[in-house]
Length: 370
Ligand SMILES: *Cc1c(COP(=O)(O)O)cnc(C)c1O
Image (tube, rainbow, N blue to C red; front, side):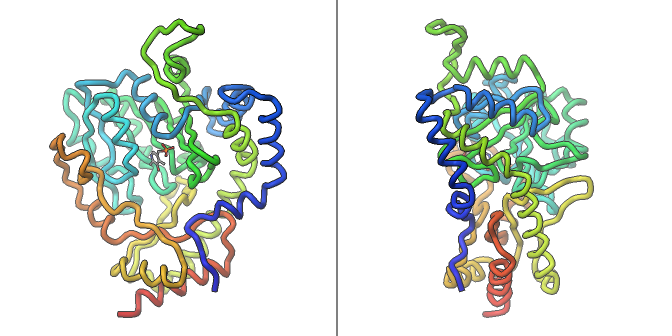
């Protein structure tokens, strides 16, 4: 029996040690550390990967969302519709630009923004939609895209958990106005520190973000607008360039692991809900998350066997203490029930079939015991 982490960052480093060490050394030798040739090259490679005209490196996924909102002209007085189930950064960005979040419940099949419930939340103030491709499965873009167009809403995809996920054979990020990526160390494409990116096909949005990320300045010491300091650094870009070359093989491995989990749990599928991949969509399994009764008991049992799991998320966004002063009410029974019984199991490319089998055994035992 071995300890099985949720994500194994050291295993990945050891696989790529020679390439990564060389990339870091090259940056240190060059002596240019913020927005240099590595960032330029990484931006071109990412634009090609995501199938977008532009990719702009920024300091984090959270900043990517805030910058995308600002570049789309969203601000005080505007309402932005998003999902009730996500990492807090999604709503933080909305509040940071002075807009008001409106929460919509998730679909039971994919845990992503339920397109059937969006219409009921539109008001004359609604200006944008931020769907989150949660756990690696894209939102129902087939319905959200025409909806956003019909209502003249800006549509910003939160792709932090879903790089390389697809709908209609197209990768997420480039479907509408902007796509926001995070390179936080536990994401599918991860740096060794913070990093993020906005991808877009819109020249004006790209230019605006390039201006905003460096203090609103095009020419040194001339500031056209109030911007921020949100730049990707050369070390992260150099590391991410090495890793990007392996991303497709890692995604393929995640999908194989997910298949093995799903096959192994088939006999217990009456007692648990397994992740699903909607036809026409490609899941990249940032997380392999199952719903099960007595979730906390199972988690405890796995912890005793040194198998790490995570509850994503223990609370819906509208229930977060920080949002209470806004008095935002939201009816989101599906998201609420997910917070009570969803558990993310170990998932990373370097997992092996025997480690997966250990996790499966431990989960099944945990479900059986009283
Ligand atoms: C990680 C994450 C973010 C924020 O990314 P950071 O790089 O950590 O700022 C935003 N949205 C979602 C859904 C995330 O998972």
